[in-house]
Image (cartoon, rainbow, N blue to C red; front, side):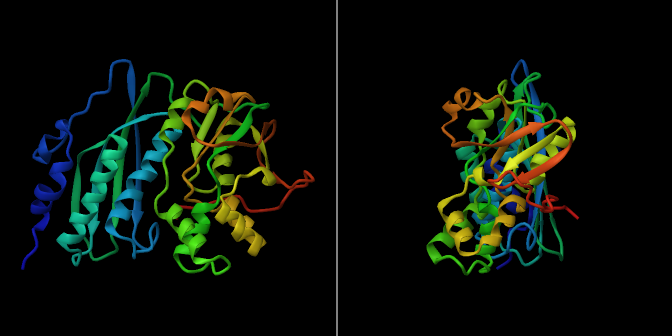
Amino acid sequence: MPGKGEFGRIRDYLAPLALDGAFDLTDDAATINPEPGHELVITTDTVVEGVHYIGDEQPEQIASKLLRVNLSDLAAMGASPRAYTLNMTLPGDVTDAWVRAFCQGLADQQRDFGIGLLGGDSVSSPGPATLSATLCGEVPVGQAIRREGASPGDYIFVSGTIGDGALGLLAAKGELAVIDEFEATLLAERYRTPEPRIALGLALRGNATAGADISDGLLADIGHIVDVSNVGAIVEFAKVPLSSAGEFALKAEPMLWKNVVTGGDDYELVFTGPENLVEKIKSSGVPITCIGRIVSGDGVQLVNEQKKSLPIDIGGYRHN
């Protein structure tokens, strides 16, 4: 039985996801207007089969991760999510059932985060599946949280727990034999389904001096902040918050500490501000931990409990 083809898939699976300004995906482009006194925040990310996801995930999981990694970028800038566009480059053997399940995953995320589809493109390719989403959010004029803005004396904070993404990738690939199946499943789920910190990002507006999401790795993303802010940072490893599964993994294999601070895919937020910042943002309901200080100078220094430097390559994930 022949498949629906490109236009049949758009009509049956994607058009029901469209916002009003997308005109049921029947036009060449869409319209979107920010609320008065707001400006648009735009971000885009691509996930490639075999690079950003393993390939054995359910289509719904892939759709979820695609939108959530973009939502994390909006959260880092304090933006409220509005809409997205979608580009799909799919191998010829992808079935209508796969596309239908993928679009159901999109629908689930739209419901959870209050966004809708504006349009995009769909093409066939002999290569791996390549999926790109561009998200639009909005923020009051002049209140977007930037990487630039950290100053000596600021404290460095992170949300949630760190290292679960990198450890979860190992677990998902069956390369983390040091922990039991239950803990491995928890970590793999953190890798496959990150939690964008939208509420926290909104609470940080007007309170944080700088911020970023942790996609390339904790130290690398702190490095992005200090580079553009022309400052340095001291991070205390002992204060980096770990999940119970992460703690278990490090007790079994201590050298995994390097994966914790350099691995990507956590999609937590790292941000700077005054010591009392936690009190100002507690309404977000997200656990916050202070892990270091912004100092004069440059670069990021990781220290142990004795304040001695831990030599490590902080380069993080590179999009080669």
